[in-house]
Figure 1: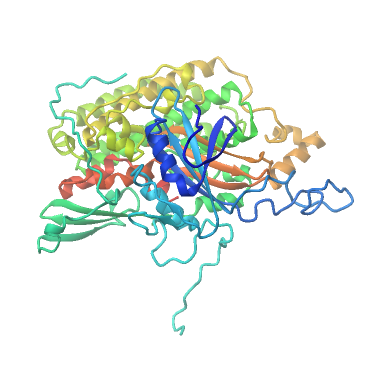
Figure 2 (figure 1 turned 135 degrees about the vertical axis):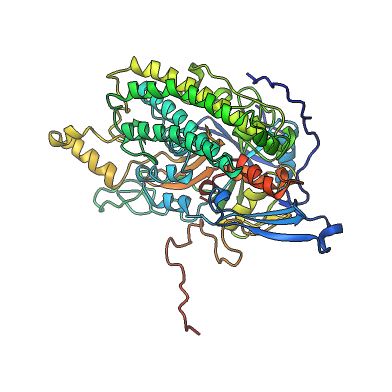
Length: 181
Length: 425
């Protein structure tokens, strides 16, 4: 399927048999409308947010943090076999779309965001986006602009922080002691 | 192939019912909101009929539901965060616990996603066995749904019958994997162990027994007047709304959409077996019940075909021969230094998975179960995200319960077959 002329299209990638369309967040709603109405992607399957903070930071095993080559005189580290390709911004938001057609065509719409950068809501395109967008805000702290019900979904309303971020600690929930001022 | 509708004159609901502006919250009509007639009831989170821990804030006008607000998150356990901290190999253990009824499907989708990144070939025997267990697991999940769903409407005997067959499936699971639930039997590259002798005859007995049991279920419920009155024409979700809300699986097929990933986007060997995909048009509780019953019949047929193939594959390998990913055979550890090193590396550090991102979807008992994984090329997942079919189904609650009676609310929410472990992850 050809996606040239899609509003706000930045890049098209093919990997592992999957198509990824990187879209400018400012024109996301337009792009989604076009995908739904012109390309037949009637169904929003999932919205998955990913935090890339510290991506590639373990460095490459055999040497630490540089990409100049394997130095066998340095002690081994528990790093990666190769440094992964750098990412444009901290967060990616992935919209997995499905068309109810022969061959089940799928496409992934990807937008890149910095910390605190808002993404427009696609609830007007697919009503099913409601909870997925609330989950993205709750778990990753991605603000959704124009969401009809911008609240946390899984955590308590007064919860601090966004648990799936890479800088959120695994343990250490603050404990309130009785008699504490 | 659609199942023929026998003498049902109920009209097929048309026109959108999705609440506006918030699709997942049913708000009370402002005209009646401030009158004294509206009673707000807190339903759950700990209530036996919420299928886990779900809280519904329901506004009632008399007995009629006029407002609904679903609160989730009570069993959020941070599966996805935990999986990021484990090696790929160890993270498989978490997957089945997310959806604790269709556990085998969850295990499958995660393992398939890892294999897609690795580009690993899986032996035929392992693929057939994965299919067989996934289908048994689908029956298991539908049985639990049927048992509890009927129990909620007062049909207590249904519970005992359905759990009798569920027990048989758990026994089969124990025979193969050593565990009754959460088996962790699917390993990257194939199966964790060979299929034990004696499994095929036992499974054949089940395949012979199960269709008769389904006839019994029909006898108990299908023509039961109380059951019909409390399910027909209730919990309506039409075709357009189901698609707009991203529904999948039995909920989507009961709304008249002929869509099944096993047939339309085949994975494993589903393109090599014959099975029926039941589709019904009314989008009510009754049709969702009928779809699940017919799916159990179809699953039994698939299990039988898998058995036919598996019996001819006796002695074939059950896991890929890739020593960088797959544990070496136990007996080699005593004789081969190389095997010992591989074993040590996989268990301690884990195998590395190539950099990339993939999304894999399977047809779970509840619908499209997806797994989106990101790897940085290291031994641990960078990100794991499960697309839970229940999550989407529960978001449709506000659409389906409009104008229902409070007593039917339980049946309607139950008919969406949501499982809170999967919703909250």
